[in-house]
Length: 363
Image (cartoon, rainbow, N blue to C red):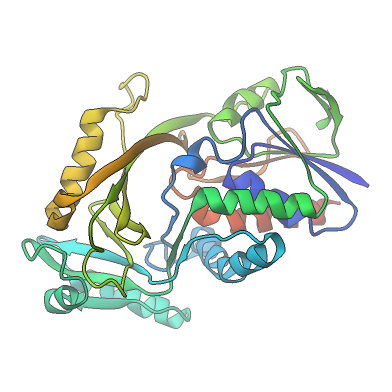
C-alpha cells in the first residue's frame, strides 16, 4: 500500500483526492489548516473558459480540453455518488467585443476549434441584441458565443469531491497545520510533521495555492507564488436579465456576469496589482469599479440589490507560467499541483489526471 499525502483542499486538492481514490493500492490522506474550499476556491466564480480561450495548442490547450470533457461526466458522476446537487450552467459563455476590436480576429479561432471538434459562433450586434436584450447597444460590436463552455458552483463542486473521495476511502484532516521538520533522505520526503502528529508518505502532493511557497521553502526548494486579488458581488433582481430561458455567462473586459439562481447573479473580476503595490487587500473602491464596469455593458444591473460581497487571493507563479504541475526539483516523490492563478476550477480535473499519471508512471 502506497501512502499519498495531499496538502491543500481547495478544488484542486479535492479533485486530486477524488481521482486517486479510484486507484487501488493507494492510501490517501488530505490535510488542510481550514475547512475545504475556504481560500481561492471559495471566492471563485467557476467560469470554465476552455473552448473560448485563445490557447490554441500545446499543454495549455490540452489541459483545458481535458477538463471541459471530464466535467461533462464528472458532475453527474459525483451527483449520483453523493446525492449532492452541483449547480452546472450548460448554456455557454458569451464574450463581448467592443469598439476598436476586430471580430475577424476571432475567425481563425473559430476555424481551429472546429477542426478540433468544438463549436464557436461569431455574433454581430443585431444577433447579440436579439439573444441578450439586456445588453447595451453602445460600443458593443458583437460577441463570441461558446455553447460548450460551462460554469459551476466551485464550493458545491469541492464539497462533492470531498464527499465522493471520502466514500471511496480517503482520509481528510481539517484544522491541521504542516510543520517545517519533514524527514527527507536522498531526495525522498519520507515523513511530514503536523499539528496532529507524524505522517509517513510515499508521495507528497502540494496543492496549497499560496500556502505552497512556505511548504516548498521548508523543503529547501522554494516556489515563489504571489497573490492576485479577485472580488465579487452577489446581486438580486426582481426579474432575470433578458430571456429567462437563456442565461449564459456574459463576460466583457474581464468582468463576468454569472447567473446563479432565478434573478440572481454573481458579478466579479480579478484585479491586477503592480509589483510594488504592497499588501494585497480587498478594497471597496475596487469592488465598486467592478460593478461600474459591468453596468457599462449591462445597465439593468443598476436596479439590483447587493446581497453580499466577497474576495479571495489567486495564486500566480512568479516568473513562470501557471499552473505548476510536476516534481518539486530535487525530490522524486514530491509533486506540485499549484499556482493555477485564475484557472483553478477550470483546470482541476486535468490537474488531477496529470497527478494520477505521474504517480502511476513512477510507481
